[in-house]
Image (cartoon, rainbow, N blue to C red; front, side, top):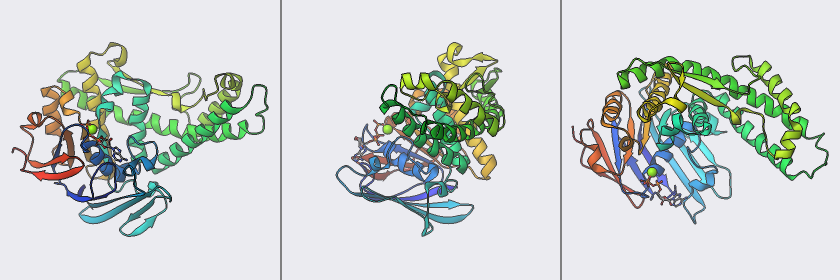
Length: 373
Ligand code: ATP
Ligand code: MG
């Protein structure tokens, strides 16, 4: 599975153009702020049905313009397909696959699976819980269309409920509206917990194997999904929904006092353990990076198992953050699928497998000589 060509118009700072990719390794070089990450973001849109960083889609439209369009020519299962997205300041987005209109980004999902690994992903181990939830969200949105639906619903309801808690005057009655939000939020939240906990269990063996390969060590990496103490993440969805609702009811006064949602999977986390010891607290810098890398590559393995094809691996600015052993490992594991890597230091890229070099300057992408073989 790979993206062969990408048509760009009005997307971020990128100029109107068509970019061709190699089905193997593509190295995207350029100084800071030229448009390298924007290019990955455009490719990832077709994988995730959303940006990996924009909160609102209109951010994708070039400053001062009313519209943007992306077109991807992909090859999947030996068949060529076209995917299109149009964004407008004034109208709803329009998505098409092979010329046929799609009703929602969910229908894009699964057509060009992508695994994204950027500097934030290096925080999966050492950073806050948000980085770990993002890891789960990015993977599950592509793997499980129902997850994307539940997540969008959750985010929407969470926003509503937060405004309700914030804007209600002290003493005002929320008795009619709050229970409605709570039960819907609990249902969407329970679905998220169920999927995330299953994925954490599923990732463990693959990540443990990769961690061992990269480090050459024998420590076993494992993941455990953590939610509110009184809930068991392995419970069925209905039990989780009932448990969340009960917690929300119990904490209504506290939520009103804090003016925010205190109960739900937006506070959840995953414990990463190395031989049973929490990595976040005790892991060395190197162990942490190795674990982050192992988790992302494990995600790629799971996609490959489920889809029967290797997803596109998008690496944004991470190679220079890794030592030569891990760089080597990444470059060796890259075999077999399409990879698009951004980098600002040309010197770092020597020794890459054969592929294509793209240069980005002021939003224009040009082809350079093939990478060193
Ligand atoms: P770095 O090496 O620092 O990561 P980069 O090449 O990855 O740089 P990008 O993140 O792709 O840089 O951003 C390139 C430029 O695009 C930034 O200067 C940013 O201001 C600009 N940009 C972002 N969104 C828009 C937009 N909607 N319209 C126009 N320009 C934008
Ligand atoms: Mg960048």
